[in-house]
Image (cartoon, rainbow, N blue to C red; front, side, top):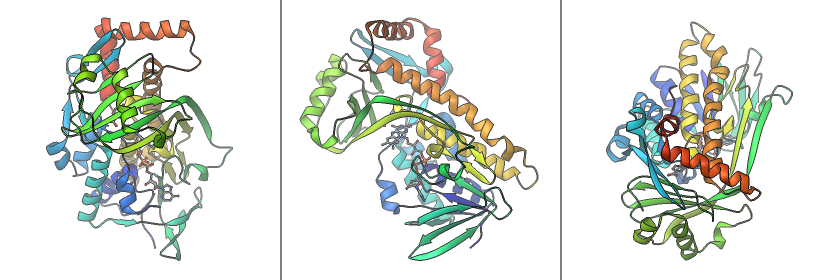
Amino acid sequence: MRTQVAIIGGGPSGLLLSQLLNRAGIATVVLERSTRDHVLSRIRAGVLEQGTVRMLHEAGCADRMMREGHPHHGCYLSTDQGRFRVDFTEACGQEVMVYGQTEVTHDLYDAQDAIGATILHEVSDVVLHDLTGDHPHVTFTHGGQAQRLDCDWIAGCDGFHGVSRKSIPEHVRQEFERVYPFGWLGVLSRTKPAAEELIYANHPRGFALASMRSEHLSRYYIQVPLTDKAEAWSDEAFWTEIRRRLPGDVADSMETGPTIEKSIAPLRSFVTEPMRWGRLFLVGDAAHIVPPTGAKGLNLAVSDVHYLYEALVEAHRSLRGVEAYSERALKRVWGAMRFSWWMTSILHRFPDQSEFDQKIQENELHILRDMPSARETMARSYVGLPF
Ligand code: FAS
Ligand code: PHB
């Protein structure tokens, strides 16, 4: 088997890159470990930056998002002294799109089907070969048969636990990491969202986030200790706790009901450098992980795809984009890494924080509440800095 670009991983990074390259006349093969249903069962991101919206338009799969997605022009931050709004439109004339990653993945799969893209599911034993040589290729097992895929380039879109990052020699890789001493317990419920915009709450009992997927589907998160198990949280216990952390008027009027998904995600900041090694490019979670506080994970994956797509389209006449990919992508990665760390540091209660730390955190929130320029800075990062 031969193709131009072998794509390891069929999550949002891999599917979007495949869609864009095929529309540009570049052949790809996507190798995905899981079944299509399993990929589509994941509940993850909910907020799309403007750049992501633009890329989905460019990929020809934005129609349903434009019909069913919800543009948001601001969000709320709340503390035990009340809540205030960060107005994106007033601050920087932009907005975000609330539309779940699950739906984005659905739309990408539908678009890939429409153009007859090659996506092999349930592959295993993926190994990357000759990354710095003249015959890059991938071996894997599919349908019980050993396979070989020869290619010009390999896009490692296989997430944090994939094989691509580890295919770069250890002595070449530099990894930067911060693991946070708490996780997020997330639930999905067929209830009316607690508010018309997202509420990020800093409460003495811990962080909470009220988000949504539609007028009838709500998404909530609360900070929990890393030792907690999702199954140990009854629906009643969850609703009681999040209502303690959200603003009183919101808590008193919010609709509760059975949860249809409940899981705990650990929080970490992680970056690996470089994001390219010979013919291999790392994309999305394969290269970096951000705490979801800044709603950057999926959006950062999309900006990597944008840079790599541009580079590979140009590669037949100039390798300038290919050679600049890692540096270009990492510049935006570190910007989003810092913002996500900052949002996490001002909104969560850290087990080991001192009273001094607490006063600094309160002051950060007061500056946001009282200074339009501080809110503008936050808004610009939240809606997404330019690619
Ligand atoms: P993904 O991990 O989505 O996809 C990688 C794909 O590669 C998977 O389908 C996997 O099966 C496949 N794969 C792995 N190893 C392979 C192998 N060896 N061979 C072949 N295929 C292989 N981001 C936000 O912005 N907001 C959020 O609220 C948010 N919540 C999250 C909650 C959780 C529990 C997690 C894990 C992530 C969350 N994220 C969130 C981040 C998330 O949205 C990612 O940024 C996004 O999925 C990145 O997409 P990919 O880079 O495609 O990686
Ligand atoms: C979500 O709706 O899942 C969501 C929204 C904003 C975040 C994180 C998650 O910062």
